[in-house]
Amino acid sequence: MASDISSNNGEGMLNDQHFELPQDAALENATNTIIAELSKKGYTYLKEDLLDEAEENFYKILEYEPENNYALVGLGDVKRKKSRYIDAIDFYQRCLLYHEGNNYALFGLADCYKALGQFQKAIDIWEKYLLHDENNITVLTRVADAYRKVKNFKKSRDLYLKVLEKEAGNAYALIGLGHLHYDFKEFETALRYWEKMMLINQENVDIRVLTSIGNCHRKLKTFEKGLAYFEEALKSEPSNFYALFGIADCFRGMNRHEESLHYWMKILDRDSANKVILTRAGDALRNLGRMEEAEEYYKRALNIEFDTYAVLGLALINKAKGNFLEALESLTRLLVNESKNPRLYIEIAECYMELGSRDKAQSILTRFLRTGQKNARISELLEKTK
Image: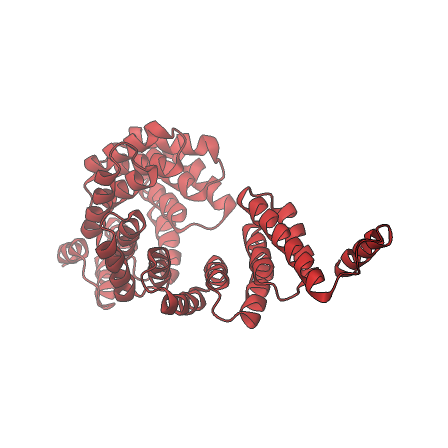
């Protein structure tokens, strides 16, 4: 490309006797002007998500100047937006090789590692970035998010709180703290942060905040409160999976199986091969006494893939029908890989009791207690066997 410029200029000179051949400085100025124009166009296209056009302009710059930081970062951004993270990493690293400490290259590189699930690498790069700009709220929240992903509760929480010190209502920090505490099963604390988020955006509450609050209530078994949030979410997005699931599961927790079934079926209308939902629908049908239909749904789930709860559901149908030996066979097989599931020990013990084998019932319940776990229902049942 640079040779094209000199030849074009030379041709112009031959046709006009008043000009002399351009000197090196003039050629450099002409090249810089072209690079600046290509860079401007490239970033305009990038902002408009015209990625192929942006890419073309940035590659042209590299023909003039292979180490140009704007072009290298621009190509990294293009590849990242196209989800070609390995290619993007290559361009960001080339930029950093020539322009150490370039903040835009560091930022893009960290985002690529985050997208690839390599959170520790992302953290290392963002912390380098913070050496140049320690108060950058966007980077602080990203580092906090990454620490949350690697289960470092303290560092994640401290960084989110640092963001809130600088910007009290920062949405990313509040949402992040909600997710952090939820991940560590501190549901009441998670609830407080998401409720703060809701108060800040009362006029336009994000559906994800509504379903997150609903999920906290589900985990806390305050199902009626959770139901209200899921229903509110469903108003703004009638087919939202998380809202439908939340409503169905709240009704399930309240033992309102007919209503629960209605919402499981709504999900299956859109996703008929969802193994988990097929099993939940089977559970609802079993609890309603519709055993043949329940059996059908459990079998549909198992035709997709093995599912512990579908096998358990079929075993419970056999138990309800008085087929205790068949139920025992399935439950005992499940116990091999689910040795800490108290429900299985209870169901097996009850089958043995129905078959008149009190000693076997006592043995299986004692076996559970030897795992070091405690369960009130198992202790109560063990007393009955004595």
